[in-house]
Image (cartoon, rainbow, N blue to C red; front, side, top):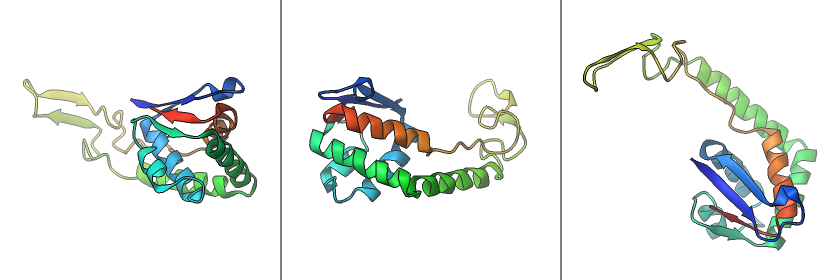
Length: 154
């Protein structure tokens, strides 16, 4: 389950395709839309969050690459990554909602009832939370935008 972005007229290997899990795409696309609201129109921003073939023209793709380069250089991306990492750290301190912090579960919704280690927290009793925004992903997306010649979001 993820998003596949395909370059329309790639000028290099980075512009051919960009694949990302949906839980990682939404924060990345949200950041791009927020920071480049003068480049993307509302329809492109909205439909880019879905797998429905939204097309971003080459001119806009290059403008996004330039904007992301600026945001990487001025520290905006690093601040956003720190915000997501702090949020993930707070989530890891919370009790797992599936086993209620016990690390073991009794699932009565299936027959016969399932006992054993909680699959949601791997038996730790605390939530698994991963940072969903990283500088490396922004750099990879920037490179894709720069070399894509426009792209389609599927």
